[in-house]
Amino acid sequence: MQDSTDTINTINDLPLRPAKPEDATDAQQSEQGKPGSATPQSPEEQQAQDPVMPVELGEPKKKKRSKPRPKSKRGKNKPTGFEEYYVDAPITPQEFENERQIYDVSRPLLFRLEDALLRYQKNRRLESDRRVVFLKYLAYGGVDIGQKMFGGVDGRDLQAMDSEQILQARALASIKKDKSNLAVDFDAVVRGFLTSFFPYYFNPETEDMVKLATVTIRNFLSYLLYHDVCPEYNENIDQARTSCDIAAKELWKNQQFMAKGPGDFNTACSMLFGGDLYNACAFGHDWKPSKDDSPGMTNEAARKIVKFALACAGEDAQTLRYLEVDKQNQLGARRIEDIDGFEITAVHPPDQVVCSLYDAQAPDLNAVGKLLAKAYRDPGQPPYDRSPEEDMIGFPELEFEFFLEGSLLQYCYPGMKVITPVWEMSCGFYYFEDVNRAYCSTYTVLDNDLMLGWKKPSDLTGSQDDTNDDGDDSSVTL
Image 1 (cartoon, helix red, strand yellow):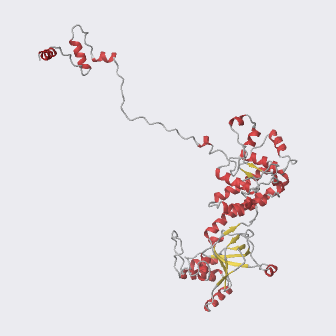
Image 2 (cartoon, rainbow, N blue to C red):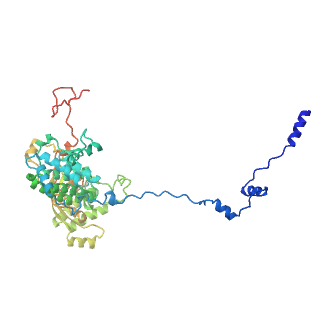
Image 3 (cartoon, one colour):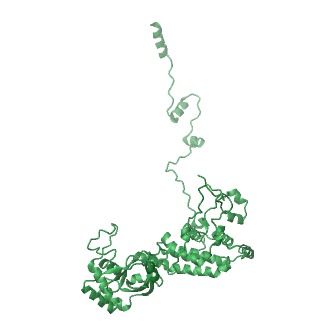
């Protein structure tokens, strides 16, 4: 007990250590209180000796976004070579001599065309849409498109090549030797591609899309003429350029006619006398698509359209015949068989007299004119199954006269082929229904589109006798 008491008293007798000053001011005051301390400094002198860096408290600086490069540096404003007034620059004498060697007539035509394709794609800036159309045109004409297998090169290989070798390495078009037995006809390929393949593979929805195809192909043909690639086919190439000009005018008219046809008069006849719309009003309009908000044509409106067309634009004999058959309740129509449509031979828009009659008596209706045509059978469709006796007689030469609104007649031209059902009225005039397809006056059907994507069949039986053109075994063993 005595030892613990002594320990407590000893602890109480120990001196206490002063607390640490809380800030610099307390420390300075404690230093001043000590004997022998230095003379106190003013705040200005102390700040001069120990400067304090100012701290700016504000919003953090935002990183500056890199500005996109202008179009001029990205090449968007660079000429493509397809402008309306674009012409190739004059070539130097050295380039001329080089081209004379490349395009010498003594060389096979396939080699000359292949070299011309390589240089054409090098000198033109083919954008994505234009490139797709151009490559499809080449494939339609028998040119193999796509990168050559096992022909890829890297940057090191390109550095060791000259310009001609680089051009060959980056080639996307080639012509195989087995195509040498095919007939060469630039005009036929252009007409076949633009009139039968292009409208239904690409389905152009604007006039610019039509011009993109025709201008691209015409530009390539002009390149062949300018560089004298195949002088033995210059006349054929020039005719192909004319076909491009014709297609540029007619393709867009065909697209508009298909979209806006068949017109009020033909729709009214289909509802009243026979066709897809026959008795549509009697059964209601439930057959219409849910998104179609356009008001349907009533029977009264359809009869008004037909009667005004006959009275204003028809002949007296047609009008009298119609009234006579109508009184006998024998108005009807039958579809003409064994034809695909009609080919237009003449277009007669509504004259001033007809337009004035419509304006005075029926301002809510569209004035109609006349369309003269003959029966047409599509050579691109399978032939009709006919008996030998019918084949000996042949197809009858039918001629039609249609009533059509002036707003649709502006898209019609002689030589235009329209694929649509044609109906004959019991009173003697004709009408047609929805326009399924419309062809140009230069419509040409070729078998080239059937060969797109075709590959030579391989022997799967493992026969050793089947070899390819190079002599290598092309059989496949499963």
